[in-house]
Length: 404
Image (cartoon, rainbow, N blue to C red; front, side, top):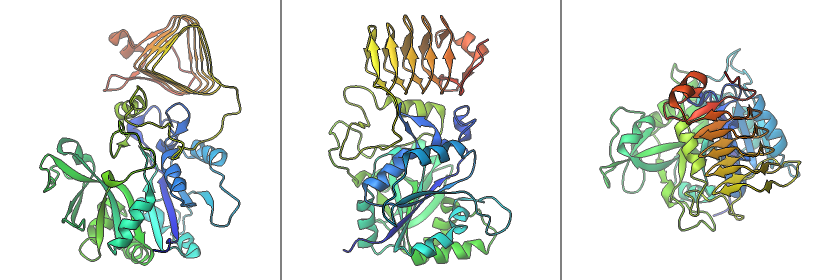
């Protein structure tokens, strides 16, 4: 088929409240990940690697950090249809913020009308995964879909926090329920449910008609709660199984269909840990499907003496006579002699002073961990002094953190 003209709307306005304190000063898509990236880099890299370059990023809450990152990292330029443009609420329907995911797109239908796409992609900005959009577009075209929902089989006990899809053997959706307390199992596997990833393709006219009709009524104005469930009886809506997607040079040891909703501190920490090891669940060392981000104007990392095992270290960092095991060290981090860091994330521009010890800690940017400080070794002391997540992970907010 001839390549369709595709316009992308990336929904990047979420608060990410369950990731507090990492989202105290930034929205969820701007949270650092993997030592050098921001979460939003994954969805944007997927689009660019798939050859889709016309991208509007819809922002709302605590957006300044995200806006600055996009300005520094995502300047495509050079051709008229190559852009990543930030769009805050335009208030075209009055002095109101975006009232839901569907309303966010509806308030920007002028951008769609001006671009005149064949297909509109509406994707979230706060998940970690790699995806070739071309394969989903081919599925959408082949099935004559008005809308296509990216979907993933998930264990039944974990599925209630997602939209649940019931589809026939051909993939056409028969029923869509947003976050039901008792998810309907898949016919082919009673221990799993087919869940929505919150990523959609729409034929332009179907989207325009559906959003215009939704805006006339009092609804949640949300794709998962309103748009998809109400569209299913009236239009061909299909589920695209993400486990059938593949990217070039994907390693045999990587988890098939790797996708993580990093909505909690525990899930966020685990997803970072998935990057480590001899056979990581998600191996980002893939030059044919790179995760792109801002460059760092500094020197290479330096390791001077000490021990560095099974870890990632960002540019400009200096590890001097210290021990770092199974951890991710961001950019321009200084780990001083005698310090020990284990199973932890230490973000950019942080100093871990001599003889300090960190275990299962997330230290946000610009922190200074004082000499001899011990975090993660005494549960009672940690609860008195720090933010301890229900998962047991200790989080130091964006620095400087006050050490009692």
